[in-house]
Image (tube, rainbow, N blue to C red; front, side):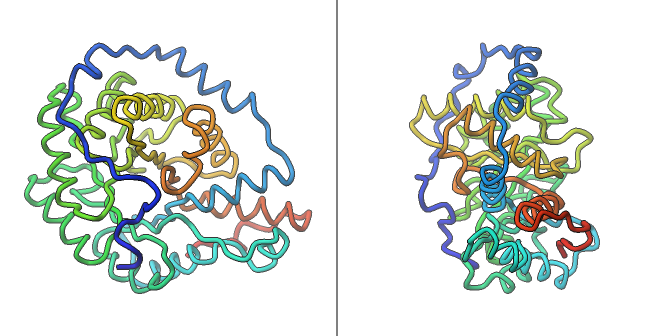
Length: 323
């Protein structure tokens, strides 16, 4: 294993509960109100200078640095892991007064897990693997469960599973719960992030309900997207999922993590999602135990902004390659 298999040691694991449809059956989501709230959140709070730098450094701590490409190789993964271990150039680290900094995790396909484990040995950086027929999830359940077990056996500390969207669209909550609970069991000690693929769920009401079922089934995190849908992470969707997290916590006493993913490319995006977390859920959700950003190119823009903060100059983006 690349780190302690209990990859999120500061948060008691969510054991799940029996399916409770009464927790979400009558929920209604005002889409226009959610969109207004999301829009005003990021305009009401402005961070500049050293405060902006601090928010960006914190974002790096919460990034799941990701490569999910068809042409991934062991060498590409090794280079990505090197970036995860040292995400900022030495002169930027010195200018910020930092001695150590790394990303929250590295996320790869199951076949790339052994390469990531080797590259991160001894660093304490978790290896996350997508599974369950990512990104569509349209595989027989026994094969999806086998893929989870294989990735865990290879050393994955965290598993990003995809739910069956059809169960949400047909409102078959028992089937969604049963599948997700079996996936949680297959993960064993590895933490499970449930990807809802919100861009394919049609309504914010469905997003809330799917979030609640995933948490009832034992998800440690809920995640917006695979990054492969036409629409990925958006602030209104993230707001609805944050409200589901808050409601579940009030009902059970357990804190569940949140991971937006896909479509986030800029330092501004990194700050926007952190503001959402702080405003809706509090400072605990600014830590990698409860918050991750599924991204790759975002880190390059963050490094570019931090270099400007330190030196007063912007570097070409090519100077901050990821892998």
